[in-house]
Amino acid sequence: MNIHISNISGKALYEQIYDQIKNQILEGTLKEGEPLPTIRGLAKDLRISVITTSRAYSDLERDGYIYSVVGKGSFVAERNHEFVKERNLSEMEDYIAKAVEIANRCRLTEEQFVDIVKTIYRG
Image (spheres, rainbow, N blue to C red):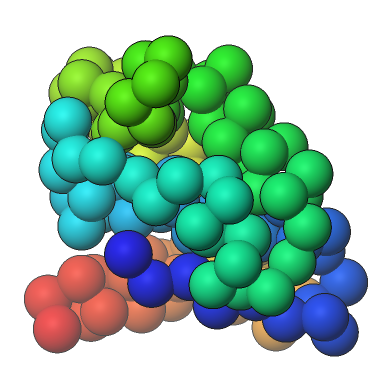
C-alpha cells in the first residue's frame, strides 16, 4: 500500500490517508479481505501521530471501506459492486460538472463540448 502525505496540500493528514486508501480500494489496488497496516505501523511509517491514522481508519470503517477484527487488525471490506459503481459515477459527475463550467467560460457549444468528450473517450 502506497500512501504519500503532504504538509502543504491544504488537506488534513487523516483526510489524505482516508482518500488514498479509499481510492486504492475503489480502483481494486487493495483487494477484498486484504489486511491493512496496523494503525501504529502506518503512523510510524508515515512519521505521524497514531491519533491521525486512527481517525482515518475510523472514518474508513464508518463508511464501509474497511472492517476491524479485535486482535487481528483492519481489512478491506467486501466490495458491493453497485456501491462502488455509484461512488465512481458520483465522482465522474463532479468532474463533468467542472468541465461544463470551464466549457461555459470558454463559450463552447454543447456540440463542441460533446466532441471534445468523444475525442478523449476514444483515446
